Image (cartoon, rainbow, N blue to C red):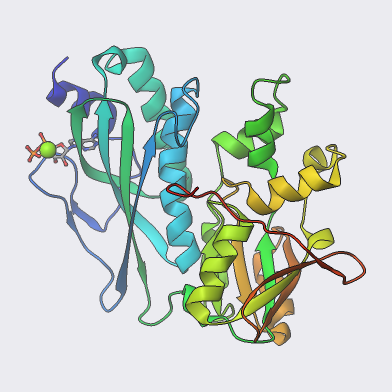
Length: 316
Ligand code: ADP
Ligand code: MG
């Protein structure tokens, strides 16, 4: 199979057709039609085997997740995802039908579910690595930035925290709980939530490296601090089966890969925010305050002496 046959067979028609694609896979570039007057939101993320996913991850899960992490970034900006390009580096041992078909199927499933179109890419030989660049659009000035948090805002998160980290931790120990494994391998980017909270949230970020690290990005960009009540961190029924409170906190605050949104919302907009989100839970976990830094408090309001941080790629 040549590179051209491979692209044709697995990637040329892997997504929903869109009227805003003038030219998709096959020419020197894609040609796209953003809605007149809107701003373009662009993001890119690479997944490396052994670093971003375990070596034994199913190829369909790799395909899904590579797209999901990019759509999650668009969601965190409140952008409407439209298109993506895929740079795929493969060892010859994986350029075979079983691996490619499963990878493309996982990728296409999420692309269809979210209505985004694969419009181009690049295919090369080497250690397995997947880079996706996703593009979306926004009305001018509507982006949910990290820098907009204000003193008094409620810090909220969508969904539940810690599931993906627990799945990763338990990967080799116990037969994996299906729900937790799906949270790790097939995260649902919170696109609808990001769109719904445009104009309501002052700041947003998606939780890819853990709450402790990602919330600090908002605090630094906004020049504020926050206090978080650890007992309010939302957990799933599957996660709640873990009984050790210290381990729960470690996974919920420092574990990554949940791809929920963390948002700062003025208190008087919280009811409207919840109404707009419908069935997706939005949990209040703390407040933005003027003093810089991140303070963790227990159920009685006592500050905890904790140095929690998120995942660091180049950290100590
Ligand atoms: P070029 O030599 O111009 O870089 P390529 O041979 O790399 O062209 O790609 C040919 C066409 O196939 C282009 O339209 C490119 O966007 C598309 N393409 C290449 N690899 C992929 C891929 N993995 N997924 C989707 N489209 C791809
Ligand atoms: Mg090329």
